[in-house]
Length: 165
Image 1 (cartoon, rainbow, N blue to C red):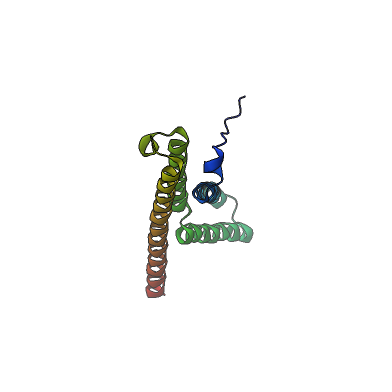
Image 2 (image 1 turned 90 degrees about the vertical axis):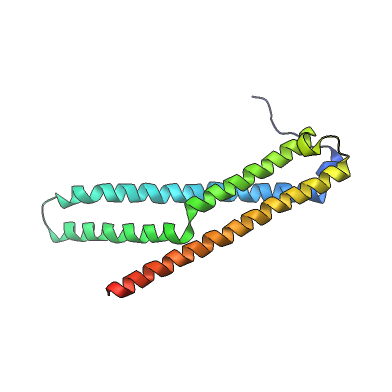
């Protein structure tokens, strides 16, 4: 299999804009993968536990069976709370979108295509820096919104639980 890595020209590879792009690309790609893994593991656990409860309910009645069923319900509630609080699915998608946007800018710069076409290295790097920071700033704003929404949902749930008690 051919090596698909491309080494940029020295004037690009040595620039602060290129290093910032690579740093942010590694961060967002890594976080997207991490959040995807967390989300899928928790969801698969929830599916397994939820599917097991009806089966457990049909086992011969014993105190152990009741505790296992009740414990499964508690674990499901806790895992749902973790998903609600951490917003893994939303962050996974947002971070992946940002990583893909950064990859696009990287590819366009290296191919001297799009807005990078016919630009000298200093001008292309200035444009790269602006685009990188715009993508990061947009994602940061979205992160604040996701966290604010998660906090509001947790507070709403806590209020409902207080009113029931």
